[in-house]
Length: 273
Image 1 (tube, rainbow, N blue to C red):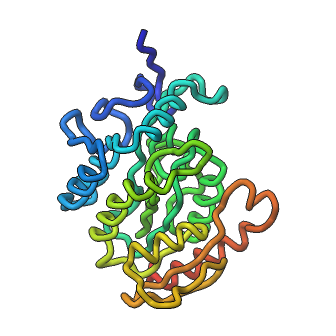
Image 2 (image 1 turned 90 degrees about the vertical axis):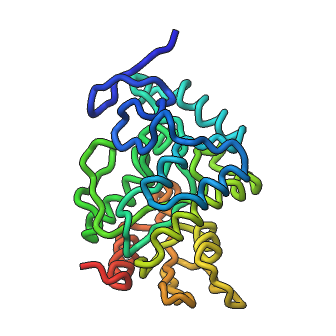
C-alpha cells in the first residue's frame, strides 16, 4: 500500500519520495520535466537550461547516480523517528534564493533528514539552524528559522547552492558522483554569474569547487582558511568559512560570532544594502 502523510505546514498529503508536480511547496518540476539518467544527459540538460527556474526543475528530478537515488529514496521511506509522520522530499535539491543574486553561498550536499526531507537547501537540520540564524542577523534573509519549504523564508540578494544535489550515504559522495553532478552547478553559475560579486565557501571542499566553478586558474591557487578573502580574476571575492556543522559549532571551532563576521564582510563585498 502506498502511504501518504500530511505536509507539516500545509497539511496536503504526499508520498515519500514526493512525485514531481503534485503540489509540494516550491516544487519546480512537473510530470513532463525531462529526467537525466546518466552523465551525458545531465550535461545536455544543464547546457540547455536558459533560466534558473528551468534548471531547478531538471535538477529536482535527476536520476543519474544509482547509488544516490537508492539512498535518498530509502531514507525517505525509512525516515527518522522524529519525522515518521511527515512526507520526505526524497529527490535532488535545487539551489535556493534569488535568481539574480549578488552573493552566492556554496555548501556541500543535502542532509539525509534535512534538505532530503524538506526539499530546500540547509532546511530542517542543525547546520541550517545555524546558517539561517546568521543570515538573518546579517539582514540576508527575512526570518531566523528555516523549517520547511512553506515557512515564508525569503532571500535578500543571496542564493545557496551545492556541488552535490542528493543526500549521500555517510555524507560522502564518490568522486564519480561529484563529477556527474558538476554540470548542474556549472549551469547555475553561468546563469547567475553576471551579477554575483561575492561567494562564501562553507568548508575546504566548497572552496575548491568555487575555484573550479569560476574558472580561477591562478597558480598557486588561494588556500582555504576561515576568514580568508581571495580576489578571483573575474573580480569576484571568495570568502572562506568553516562549515556550520553540528560538530564545528559544538566544539567551538566555529561560533555564531565568527559566522556573523563572515556574512557581514560578504554582504559588504557583494554590495548588498
